[in-house]
Length: 323
Ligand code: ADP
Image (tube, rainbow, N blue to C red; front, side, top):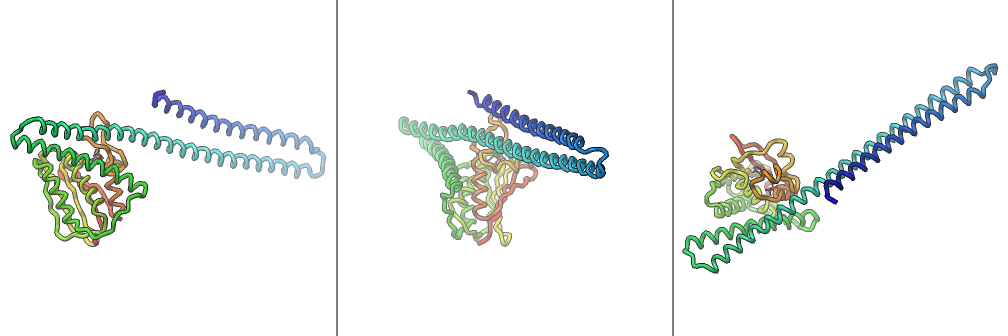
């Protein structure tokens, strides 16, 4: 059965059961009220008008009826509220589950593509190098293109592995003193070598130290620089700016891309989330990078946020405790 049909059936059963339960509750209330009314009539008939304390007995029966009605209304309202709260909880949980499964499906599609493309390109380049006699400049281009693709593959594998290891508590993050100035410069230089045609600038103050895990922080920085390159036009500048703002070390990754709306700023750190639909996305990706980056920064008890760059673009801001 197609998934969308299955979802429709599940939601139909859910709404049917909810309406049925609420109707049963209303019916229960009406039946009890009627029974209460009949009991009152029966008791009224029992007492005789000429009895000396007729009025007192009448008042007692009336007040008992009022008490019972109040009791039914109270119990009914509590049941009703519990049913609505339970239904809301189930509805939200199921919706979240469906959304996650949809995102996972997108992720699987994206990852299959992301894994296959670099392998196919690297294979083709190597085969060309093996089969043909090429001049030095062509050889150089093929090798650097192959390196770029294997780097992409390496980043993706790191993201997947570390993400799942952090999630199930399998990654023991180190807590050593790290020269984040050197790390930021190294990451920037690496991207400058990989993308010689891009204008990547670093304004990194010297001797900035934080405590943490070198591999994790390197992954976080690489993901942010990679995104800045991926999501901004080729002719635009990317700036990596690191400075001290005691007791924190601040790192800015600025791009001059399309920017991110306030609505999307809240969502893009979710796992597998990507802006826009599959058809309109031009840059390839899996939606894993930022969720992992945020996890890494939180593991370091730091903060990550996004600001708008002027006149356009985004600034990703990392705040880490100075060592
Ligand atoms: P991926 O890049 O693999 O899609 P990420 O988790 O790194 O996954 O990013 C999630 C989404 O956030 C991206 O799909 C993109 O739409 C958006 N995004 C991330 N960085 C930027 C940026 N610098 N400028 C504009 N959009 C961005």
